[in-house]
Length: 284
Image 1 (spheres, rainbow, N blue to C red):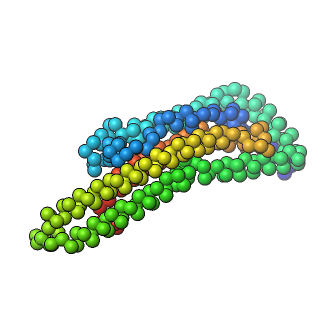
Image 2 (cartoon, helix red, strand yellow):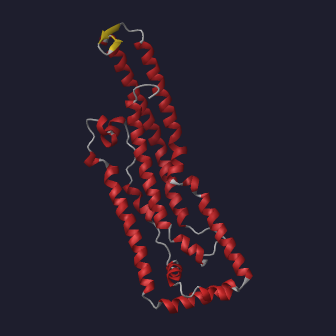
Image 3 (cartoon, rainbow, N blue to C red):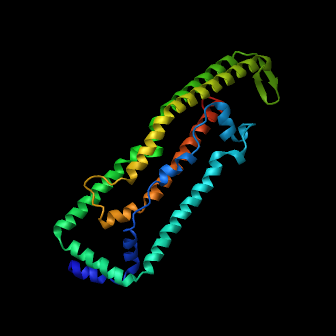
């Protein structure tokens, strides 16, 4: 079957053509950076973390004031809004003489595809854009967070485990008290040791958050740059390539997903601090 015959066979598939025509409408930009201010930043210290995400382990936590719980439905509503906009555009296309528009699109595609040079240029352009998008992966909010904050948590966890091991070693030297549940260190000996360990764990959690907040500005700047690059069209990529137009329709959704991941990152930074303070043993 010739290319021209293949395109003639596609004429009845108006739904597919409507999608391609919809792709001619450029994706709206700025969704990511517009939503950045809504993402809760990491807490500045342990007390703040206990109030923001401490859950049942904190006397100051209030789920109604949890900034991540408040943000989640807003992001879901925005996601639904984006989906509704896509459907509305598709509906608008289908109401605007779709058969005539489809015929025009088919004619343009047939002319383009009948030129081997144009076919090769489109393939190269599509491949270049795909490679460009893949290259942005390490700068995405979730992957960048591993490099920005992972070492601080690893160090904090090491400190806390060392504190707990030292505590257990001291507790083993305490006189034992016998009870129905078994033997345990005498309370007058154990309580000061436990209190000292709790203070040191709190200090380790605060030190972790201090490192997190020191790394935060560079991380935030990187996320902003990531969204700009997501919206950019790199050199050598044809903006009129139908496949690229179609792919770029997903930019708002891609950026909103980045915001969701960034919110998850900051929530984890908060819960990590609380976890360092509440960790009971070096193995759990």
